View 1 (cartoon, rainbow, N blue to C red):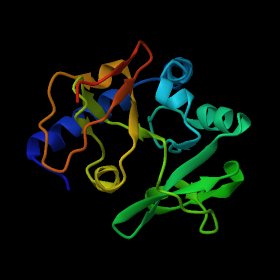
View 2 (spheres, rainbow, N blue to C red; view 1 turned 60 degrees about the vertical axis):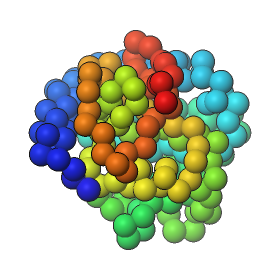
View 3 (cartoon, helix red, strand yellow; view 1 turned 45 degrees about the vertical axis):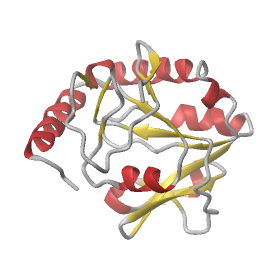
View 4 (tube, one colour; view 1 turned 135 degrees about the vertical axis):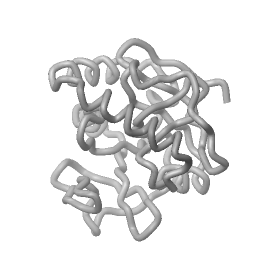
Length: 187
């Protein structure tokens, strides 16, 4: 699901840009995003929240996940099964193990529930209108095409770009949260 050569080139450019962000700046940005999420009604009032465990230079979600669990929210992380993705409930970080692509994902005994109130979506790049560029595997697009829910992209301000060529299967993201602002896209 790589898409066009233009998207591949854009993905590589944006990953390089994000990878060059220092750990300290990423931690600061992640903390700011965590505070901004509390202002989104759909997130604040959600009981069943899909999140992700970060890899590489993704926004650090560990504190967000810990805070949600502490608040008694139901937290679900994705697990890749074949060419599909499903969300499984975790109790804490001990519910995770290294899975596909060396990503921490829920263990097999964690209960599956794909009917979530909101999902935090990892993002390589995104346009203001909510066209998201991921890693090119299409797991989130396939999942979101079958499971309608509110989506929030967690990304750095510098990963928002003017235009991303939209493919037919791309699902438009509802909200974008960066270290500087949080806003709803014009779906």
